[in-house]
Structure formats: C-alpha cells, structure tokens
Image (cartoon, rainbow, N blue to C red; front, side, top):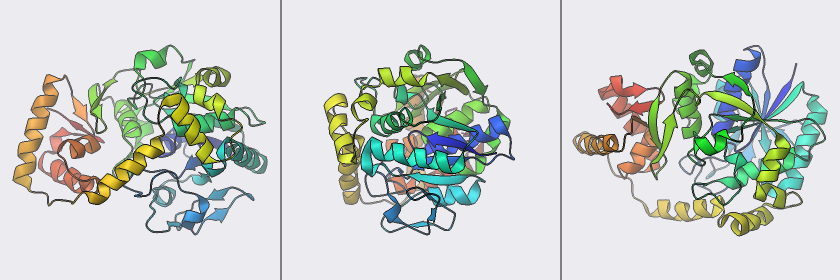
Length: 361
C-alpha cells in the first residue's frame, strides 16, 4: 500500500510527515513524502529552494519527479537535509521543484499520483500558516505553503489537508487557527515522537521539534526564532486536524492569486504585492549579512554568564522552554555554532534538556 504525503512548507514539515505516517498507518507503512529542498541558511547558504539540477545522485520516479536517496548530494555550495533524512527514515523523499510556479507543481503532483496510485494523498502543514490570509502581522513565510496549496487544489485527485500543532510555528496565534480547524484526526503521543527522535537531534526545524516535545507532554510557553516569538504549549498542541481544502483556498489570498503562475519569480511578485514581502528576499538579505559575520570561539565561562542572563530575562516573560536556535541567536552566535552550543549545554546541564527543547528552570 502506497501513500503520498505532501509536506506543505518543506523542511520540518517533511519530518512531521514521517511521524504522521508512522502514527496513522504503522511502522510497516512507508509513504512517499513529497517536499521542497528548502532549508535554513544554517544548512543551505543559498537563498530559496533547490531544484533537481542542484543535486547529484537523484533517482527518477517519473519524467518530472525525482527521489532524493541517501546517496544523493547537493552540489556545493548548496546544502540539504534530505539525503540524511532518507538515510535515517524508511520513507521515500521526492523533490518538489517550485521554479515552474503552481502550474509546474500541479503537474509534478499529478504525475506522481498517476505513477504511484496512492491509497491516500495528504497535504500536511505544521502550525497552520497555510490558513493565513496574507496580511497577518506575525506571518513570516507564506510563499511555500501557498504554492503547495494552490497546486494541490488543482490536482485531479482527492487531497486531504491536515494541520498539525496549531500555532506552533509562531506565525498565526493558536486562537486564530483554532477557529478554522476541522475534526481531530490524531493526537501525537510520546511513542509517535520516538519515530523521529534521532532526526531531531540534528534537524534545525523548530516547529516540528516543538510538536514532538508537546507529544512527550511538555507544556508551558516556548520562545522560538530570532525574534523570540512566544508559543503556548498546551494539550491542543500535539493534535492533527483535518481542514476543508476549499475553505483554506478561499481564505489564502496568495494561493488564489498564483494558481496560473509558471515561474517562481511570478510567485514572488504576487507575494510582495499581497503580503508585502517575499521570504526569499529575506533569505537573500540575511545571506549577505551572514557572509560578513565572523564566527567566534565558544568560551564556556562567557556562555554560562550570557545564558544565565537570558534565562533570567526569559522567566520574567513567562517563558518555560526555548529552542537551541533561539538561544544561539540570543547569544549573538553564528548559526553554524548551534550544534556546538547545544552539546555544551546538554553536557553541563542535562536536567534542563527537554528533548529537543531547552527547559528554563
């Protein structure tokens, strides 16, 4: 039995798709996960998503869709988490190429559906920003989700839209997302999170990491991202809801506008017009800034003093947990130093490690 799960925003959504597949269908099920190769600049210093030409070792699934096996490699200086995901998880990871706009994505999905004849097709988004109108002040990355939504609603096959971890990406307030959700399909448990535990030791996704933590019972308030967005961790956080696909399209202005686009540049132009920005522009600007940033050596004494101050200030904000990305940014360290910082902190204060989050005691 074959199932197809489309990871709406790429990145951590692909990891969450693996957890969802194991939770709903069991370890013997090995879904095909269709996802962007679009990682944080920490992993891939090139702004925007990667296309098949940016890899070696891909395997052709259909004339226009490629799988990313464990032996595939991004061509330097590009980077990608997908080959390592393929090595550690039993699923097939197929590549979404958005450079031909929504029309191109629709063609890719339809061709893969025709080839696989899957038992089901799910479109999965962690957090719920796929339900954004486009003008929300907290919205940061509408483009990728709008593209997959625009494509999936035009596919000649039934597609089920699922939102996991309502509000956990910090882009839409949980109370706003809650009014748009349909029935609960599943509530993740600690056992479900075990399916991706090893991946979350190194994968930089914050939203999926927070989702896994709430599945293990973590509750409180978590600060994420460089902006320190507060995300409430509640009993609702580990849930997965079905959402009416047509309702989502009716609400998402960007998705409606880009349905006939044939190039990513067109999608960006609509994003700037409707949302006021393109997240790829943000990555372009940040990539230039990171090139000028000189990494500093981690000095434990300095780190502990800075961390103690950060935690003291976080407690005054009612924060109980945070991500290692957030701490790295707050301590003005480079993204490449996140893993070194994480190892230092866990090694010295293991009681504060609420995998994969950091507990502010």
